[in-house]
Length: 421
Length: 125
Image (cartoon, rainbow over all chains, first blue to last red; front, side, top):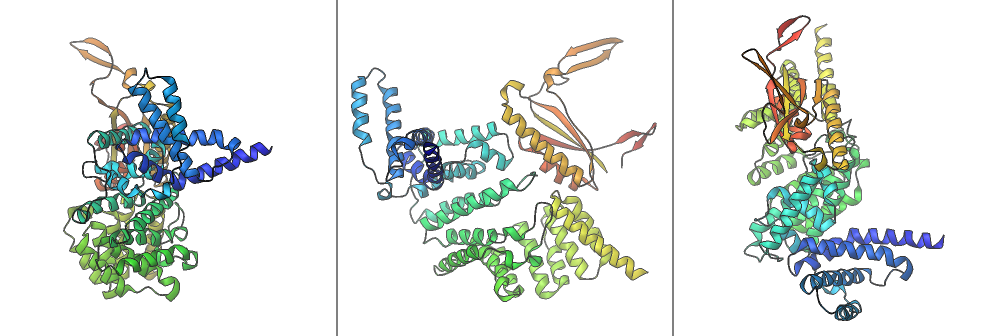
């Protein structure tokens, strides 16, 4: 009975360690020769022997150091047996005895996770595999879990990850943090990769389970990055953006029912996450270099301020959305800008801004039609609004979005009927 | 307007797929078909067995030819069809994008021409 309890404790502790220390240990192990695959194998072996040995020997005083030593010995043995298959067995035993007693303090070794993140987002790595690679190496997700999040077959994902890792090893992509001159160019892809864990374009999933679990992990990644790069305002901005968006997760409804931002109950927002996001934003601002993620973080901050003030400052939002356009004029940013403009200058101005978007893709862009429908309704142009709702609904593949728009359209049609009779 | 979402993907021999992968694929198609149904746009859906089980038939100069295998032996083969009824091509494309097979194969979107209903061919639109 007691043994059972102990082994449960060990399992829980190993799981905790896997969560907090995995990326740190893997980065240290892989940094030396760039061989992520063999570092993963060695670390997996170390975790396995911890689960076997700790219930008997007890959890070591410094479990991370124990794991690092075990993984290093394992790699050493693998390399030795490959290099000297005929070596004297006594020699192998001797080496093992020597290295096990080695006391290593991982805290004394510089954190190599930052270098690892730059490796994952290196220009020589296919952009599509950067985010999966970060999830696997820094957080220890297996290919199957990552494949599920990206809705591609596990074998395909595993193959892509292995190919990327071999490329890192064979091409000798350096485990190094870029210097000041290279930083602006190299940081962007790292931020995009981390943001990618939050903004995965989710396929149709039954339930919202994968969505929720990855959001927490992406917050962890963004916070790690912000801590490792406290002088990079955009890294701080990204952490703020994810904190502040994540804070409203529980108020957003279910996968079947959407609660739009302005109808959400601020009492259901997470005050701790909001405070953390605000702190990151403040830190970023003090560095005096504005950028896309800081502006997006600031937009979230204005929305979250309703929890205290009870109102939304649309004038501030409009200014921020206009500023965002100069950094990142995506279709989504332009539609959001039109919506914010409409709150300040009226639906006519918002509709004019929507009409001014020249990109042909806007005709197939669902959020553009939903926004147009709302603005036409506000402008009292019911027939056109109804048509735009129809179009927005036909382009919506998300159940919650579809139901929400169907509800609004039905209410609009009813009002038109009532006015006629 | 009715559209066919024609699914093409590399044909795995069943043995190369693990049970977990098959389960995953089925779960993805289950969610997808359910979403189409909930949106009220699904007319029919069918996923075929692999081309290994295909037999091709043709008649030339009055002679029946039965061939063991598919009509066209390509790396990516026709694997299934979703018939959907949506207002226009853009809506059809939005659904095609969400098809699980779009991530490992190709989804061809083609409007229906005519269809046989109640004893006669009718325009599909």
